[in-house]
Picture 1 (cartoon, helix red, strand yellow):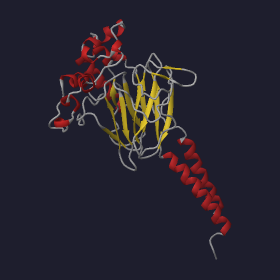
Picture 2: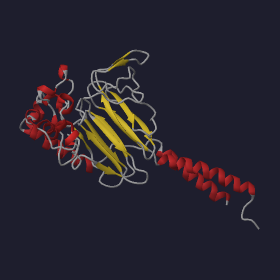
Picture 3: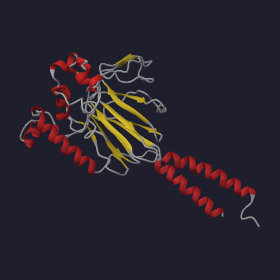
Picture 4: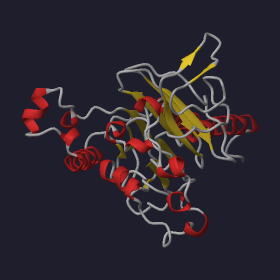
Length: 313
């Protein structure tokens, strides 16, 4: 005698398919963009070749707002913030920094025009994710990446310092809204790690990359700056925060902050670097601000399916 009829078998098959679909959704990675700047930021998103486009390739993120996207396992790409943008009602326009050259709010497969602070990700397929914040293409605004819900080191990384205030004059763009890399400014192989300098042994940190590294010790400062700049985590969601709030790094315009620290970190790059490193380390081991949108709903649905099947059989 069969354990169950063909009709019951069809029901099991149907619910099993639905269950697999929802469980598969739980494994997707959620990226949440948070704007803590005192101005609007227009994030740009570029998927690497072979990776699917996310829900948007460029959007507006007003002061104090956030927006989340889901990416499938194995996805790879980069994010950045555009500033000083002017788009009309139809979404056409451009940005002062980080513009992608598409002429629209959506970047549509175009990357950031340097200088721009970049967050780069390669999501694992059942393995580790790799991520970093890179200043190799220059800098335009502070940014950190924080992982949550994953396993492994999962360290917070990024650049807290306002490098536009410390940018060498020869690297500043007009108006001082961003800071070029030495490669972009001078185009020399020794700065670009190209030609005869295209190897870790030949391409060394320059005086300019060391300025970036001193201010942002966990960010890529030049092409072969891997050892202290690439981070890993498994099964995490990630928050990309523009202009993160760091009480210990308030400007000298805040007398209370200056009194509390005994000096002005903005006037002392080494002190600012030390404070930034300490804050990032504390944040990495503290409570996370990340969430997994819809994962509770999916998990509840999966449990419901199991209960239905148990009652039926």
